[in-house]
Length: 68
Image 1: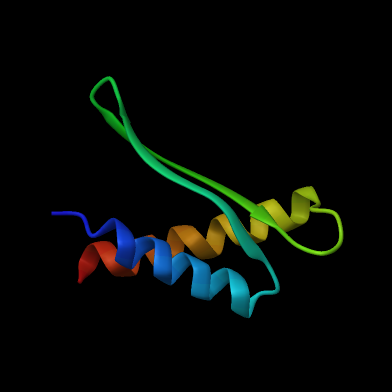
Image 2: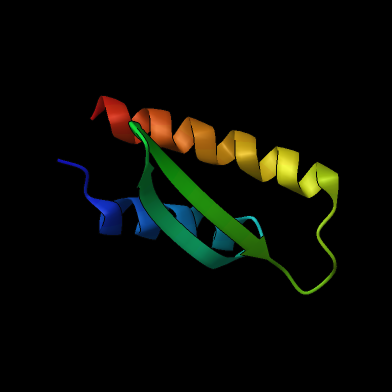
């Protein structure tokens, strides 16, 4: 069973440590797929580099959580 609160908390901690804030978190089923939708924010504007960096770190985090 997926612990969504654990995932959300871990993502929030990761983002906070990187200077971002979790603005939106949604996990839903679309057809046969499960989709995780995350929006981030920070004091200055978000760049494409920010999105790429955060996406990679969240992906690594989710891999670690998935293996535990």
